[in-house]
Length: 152
Image (tube, rainbow, N blue to C red; front, side, top):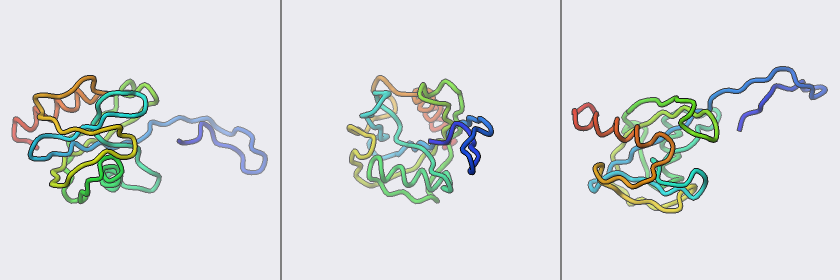
């Protein structure tokens, strides 16, 4: 997590306070049977699109590929990621102001729960579980609308 303030390297005195939104990525992983969602083992509890925080010095695409490996053990290629959109409502995550870049990618692998996932499941887009964490109900609604319109 980033610092809450800049400190003087010589004496440690507070120089300037700052607080920026944190970049995250999520990936709607498409399988022939549906999309992969994880059941979170950490707060907030519920079902979520797999994803996570972008590391310093990392591209959004690399973070998306890394997070899918860590969260659901699925190998993706950066070139196969399709941008769905960016979600930046400060209230989307009660823990902090996070901005998520959301991708869509097809996968043929067999997912398994890892990292922050207590479990995973594959759901048809018209039979999603509840509760969905964060703003993922809105994201999945946008995904479904764009998919139905042939735009993704």
